[in-house]
Length: 345
Figure (cartoon, helix red, strand yellow):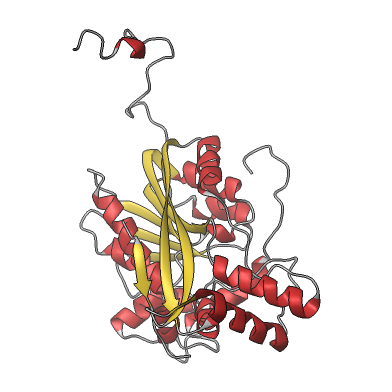
């Protein structure tokens, strides 16, 4: 399991429910993520370097699949982004096909092209056809922006032996609805593994920005996205119909040269703010104050930089099947707990 401290020192609806609350701007998030694909202002290699957490967590998902004593011939990588996880899945001996699905077409295949030393031909107008020609086991599918169309878009490839999702679900406006669609894309007794940011991720940045904005502007605006707690996500999985549900949390501490380096890397990761109620900008005055507050409160002299905390939720669930272990009926016990230990001296 991916735990502990990483040091990064670089220079300075469920069905029938009411309509989900729209928290994130899907268009803004799509634009942010596509800029990390190498076709915009960011170089692809710089974006991949900044996105090291996604690579580490791809290894965690791969390891967890090894813990399951079965093969997974067909796997869906939902929210595949640059493809770090898809590459690992395609290297597995038990996997025959990986469907890498994402809504950010300009980001898709980024890691695959870098790994193979390939570039999109300058005269190519069809990125999807090009990246689908690079690996015989990986097929990329572009998802629509509408979250409720995931299952219908991927229906021709379903059902899957496993669905995995690496650091994508925390940007969903309708997380219950997406989890329900994933369940229906699985074969009976199929496995879902996911990671997402949750809990108090980026608590230090949140505190610094709130203090700086209160001091300079007399109020605050959300600049760090709201995130789910582990128990809430577990409840959503259960409510969606999954069995054998488990959600655990890994707290990862990363050190950066300063707050500006952290914010630069968040932009390269495509994890910058996309909350609709945000003002959409932060003044230079507030940014400078936030950086100073961040350094004052969260500088780690031993590490030589400021810390940033990421709470990673690890999700496990199965599509129900009669072959799975079932709890005994309530009241079927033949011994009482109060009798345990009686007769011993």
